[in-house]
Amino acid sequence: MAADGQGLFPLETTQFSTNLELKLQQMGSKLRGKIREGFHVGKMASPVNQVGAIQSKAPAGRYAPKNRTDSDFTRRWVFPTDREIDQLIDSFDELKTIVDPKSAYVDNAAQAAGRDWDDAIIVAATSTTSKIGQDAAALTDEDFASTFKVSVDFGGTGTGLTVAKLIETKRILRHYHNDLDTDPATIVIGSTQEADLLKQAQVTNADYNGDRPTLVDGKVVRFMGFDIVVMERLPVIATNVRGCIAFVKSGLYLGLWKDTTNRVSIRNDLSSEPYDLYTSYSFGATRTQLGKVIQVACADTAGADITP
Image (cartoon, rainbow, N blue to C red; front, side):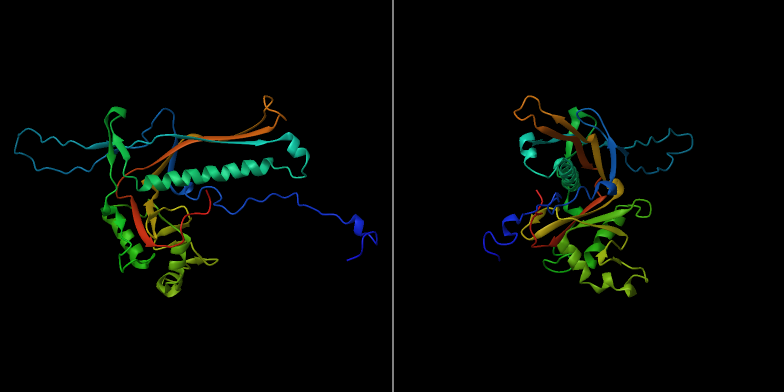
């Protein structure tokens, strides 16, 4: 290195990038396209009315009064949750940087909104307080019983995601008469469960899959009729146990009172008159019917998602 005053040393500069890159995080929603959704108004909404199965009866006799058959009706409910993100950019601070952060702020807010939707969907899948009833005055909670769960010890004590658990999950869906040909099934797993699958020859070997590839660029995207979604926001339901969920598309519902809306304005009432990047949305989620969603417990020590 040249001494002070020699060569161009006094003119050496430091250059900074004008690029802004979002830190590692789940980028938006991974589940919204896998379930049903609709738009609503009001303090609560019923996304579906359901009618139970009926059974025929033998005639009471020639010319006898007819035997009446009554159907059992159920109404499901979803409730809105309002969310907002308010980000300010000081106009004086902006003069002191070569970086324009506004587009990155908006993008960051959009990713957070998508994670909110997924979190609501995951909670609703196995909620013990899913609401059913005729109207607001007659609501009851619907429990999520063990009947709809695959134990972490299924097929062996404290096991991860195995082919045996996938077979059992599919059996339960079939048992409850889900038509997997017309109502596609999805299973949501974490990175540990993906690693579990990649270690099993039944998953990765074409000899077990009729020469149909299960791996795409090293990822298991579909197996045994399940679309596979990998995400890290699934809950830890017990010590070192992840609660994965499998469902048919009609089994979960996202209600939107307001889709993501972004507004950029200037706050004239605040010093420096900063830019105000305001994001808002309103939504709710529910499962639509017991038997359409299955919880699959898997051994997992990875812990919670790094993304807030």
